[in-house]
Image 1 (cartoon, rainbow, N blue to C red):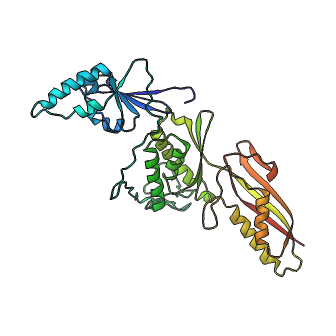
Image 2 (cartoon, rainbow, N blue to C red):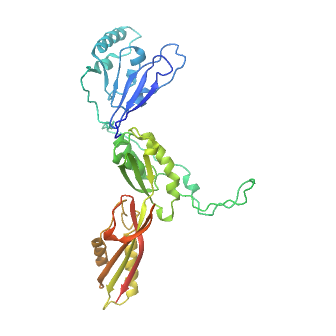
Length: 392
């Protein structure tokens, strides 16, 4: 974080002697201090999955060679470096070599001990930047699988006012109905969504660090999400979600927001609190146009006007679809782009004048201004407004 705070988690070793496992993570790195075994006859045994915890770490540091501090070292994946003092390493090599030579007691621990790195007091250790990841090996067969998720979520998609009765009498309740539709559920994850989710797993290894990590994870979270904008502002991660059904209302946005936030907090690799992630709806910016055309010599002006209005409505449609890629949060059109669109669709008519007005509502009220005087805002997503065509 900006103030450099680290997060420390003691997995084991608070209410017992031995079995020490402590995790320390910051914005860029994550390490473990000790991977100890429980002592014999420990009364408050706490099970810790060292393999799952350590595989996300940049390094593991061992304080000394006692079993209650190093006993589970073989559970650490081989691609995660282990650091130990030079004297402790020499003692371990001698002990392990003798144990490995005893019949029926060999643990084959010597190769692990020899691969450990030594730390020297006062010397800087550079062990990672917080973004190390495990990439599947190249094989002649499938190296990585993403399983498509299935559920009965679409059965809960119902229209507004569909619920009009209750299964039993409830005291003081006269009428029950749903004024808003329930949407966002699906029976099966799409192939494209599964691919995005798989790409996110490969790229970030389940750890959200960069802006791209967050965007990939969010897009793979639900098929209902069309576009994502993610920025850091005043120590907070602000996420703008554009839903595919945004023109039908805000129901799907509010349906997934809480679960998505919980999901992101769990995967975030920096020390972040839930209140530091804000998931917001876009501020929709209506684009209204007034076009004056010279239609001298043009026959059916009604067909021309209708065609231009349809073209503008499709051009300013915010969501990706068959008519285009939509508009990213914070992206604004230029008047020159609109004129080029009109010139491509006007056929024999001549564009004499164009006026473009932008209108939006935010927490301070409703605002309206010309497109040239509009201040760009990353929270804004444009959508089609009213298009008036005047002919001579």
